[in-house]
Length: 622
Image 1 (cartoon, rainbow, N blue to C red):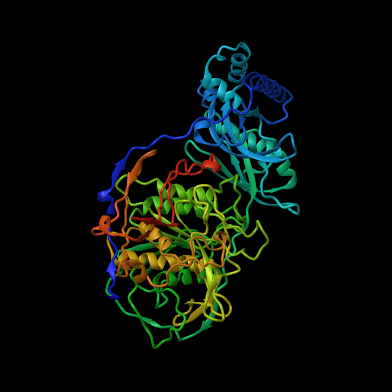
Image 2 (cartoon, rainbow, N blue to C red):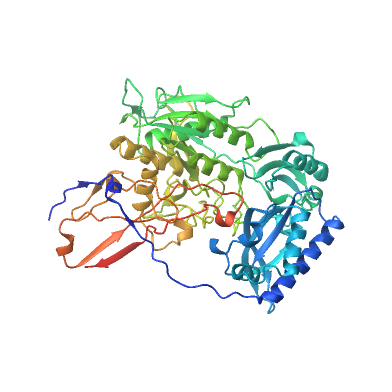
């Protein structure tokens, strides 16, 4: 038996074969008898008209209504198209909702937001009352699967506020109105009484409008009765991981090179001192904000850039010569932001959107900061949506960029406050938690590392854990002063360490693009049987990229990369000589990662579509 290593195999997609989908299963039992269900919706419409007449909410001409489905009718095949195909009624999003049934049990189901006007609602009532569609089976089944037709309650719009909350920064999410965007915003300011100069607004084409603002409990009370309001949730301030100086004059040196790597990593952070010897020539610092440099922020950004170039410097001293970095760094200073009210980093997100769209040559980015605060299932943060959209929305001939994001450092808090933080919940990127070394040298999740689960489309978050450091075994970093080292710990260091590894994979093979690097890190992560999936994701990230790029004897790793159309099924071949003539057990494991269009209007269907598969191993017997 040999210990020879074999390289992984690329371009498996050249051998993909299409397959025909086999349809199975039957129709689901409709829960409500048609006659009763029809009358209930008629009664619901009468109540809606009464609420509009009495102005129980602040309405525009276009109204946002809710079609609430019965439990277990969440699948796309049950979308209420029979009601919404009529002119003037359009689905503009969705989410989960809950209610208490007749036996005092809480049940969860799906609701759809529809944009319409009163005349169209009246036409729907007339159709139901006249019975003109009573003979159409699809119509009857649709009506029988609907729980109610109503408005979103004010308390359903307010999410994630602790009982002790009195005031603070919030994110307000408004529904897409087709013809009344300007009027909607004007009425919002009139209703909320929040000064326009105390807000920042971002509207996405055919999508939601995000407003960040400083508000009080009284402002919340005004806001929640605004009909176009989809959700409002609190936002946390940015906390930058403190970097402590370790030593002066003891930093290692770097092997000099006449040119930088063509593999460029974009870093959005607190800036970087590109004159520090370990960064000089490999980092280019860009100021994207006009605020005064903050020492803590630039120390953090310098440290993050150093990790991407050199990894963890523990055990290194001035006697050591580091290898030439296999990547270069474009550092973009976005912290501290200009606005002292700290509006959910909208200024930073604006810069990120501009840079990523303009720098099409950069395909790998690191984000080691974000607003403190656990994600909320029924609401999408703008930061998450923006990074997911930037990843997906590229020209047909362009490589999709990859964001690697720190999961957050509130893992020590009680549930659910210890859950991962935006934008680490993005579905098109990596959310990275941290592990530490215990006294016996074994690994375990860092207690500060935020846990999963993630949101729909990427339930397993963090994706994996990488080294983040602890008091006993700190992460050793590039210091701010020439020749100095520093220490820190946090997921903000685990993320750039994973970027460093993806850069190494890309440097060793032109066939590995960032998202294949993402896939390889997940696929080769090592599960810890003592930790839950919520704690570790797919496990501990490999320390040595050679363990990823090369296979042992009797093992092969194949890379597939390509485009799958919705509903398409393909057959992926297994490359093994004479496999049909071999008897025994073959262990097959696969990891599928996808880049999908995000749909912030419906957090319950945020990815629009999904791919069957995962990283779980399966055994096949031949």
